[in-house]
Length: 277
Image 1 (tube, rainbow, N blue to C red):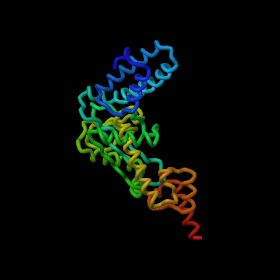
Image 2: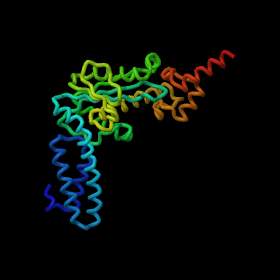
Image 3: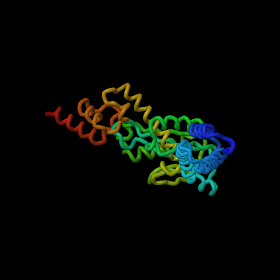
Image 4: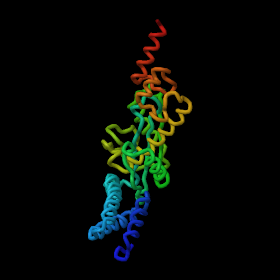
């Protein structure tokens, strides 16, 4: 694009085009980043109101590009150390009173940039669904591990989370050279691992895994909502919201509730006491 021969309307359309693109080759990402910098510099010499609005628009997109570079820098330093295939691992569902804990493992294509990737908790449902599709389309390999409520009650949530992570890594179609794990604890796997506290906000691979795990678990809970509609699982996803707790006290726990978790265990005890009386 030749800025000197472009109108404000043409520049606006170009920036809008960039804002709609979520995935591209790394080489294209670098070129477009440089173009955005040039556009902002060019528009700053123009005092039109429309130009100031476009500067803000371009700066928002530039921030997204910069965020990708920050997120991928963790992987890049390990690639420079000789690790060719890096998997990011994360889990969701430790805190809910119902449903499984789900983990995902993702090996990203180092030649593809997926803009907008972030900790799944910082994204809206719509953003997660869009990025889920992009990751599924461009990742080299994706693995998912699921541990249900019954097993969680038997072995505790920490062990269940680690087992779900192991399952996710074993489910990959290709073995990674290094596994980056969100949090303090690493699963017991025969591969080099590195734990990163807050990794879902620092590593593109881990953030991608958090998105895959979150969307996968949300869809599972949506399915359970059709079986147990009284608990509102499609809304609360099994977390202890006021409405969920009210339903739990009214109807008691169902098959997918974690019986070892308070207040589920307390409600079970109260029911047993009342029955014995």
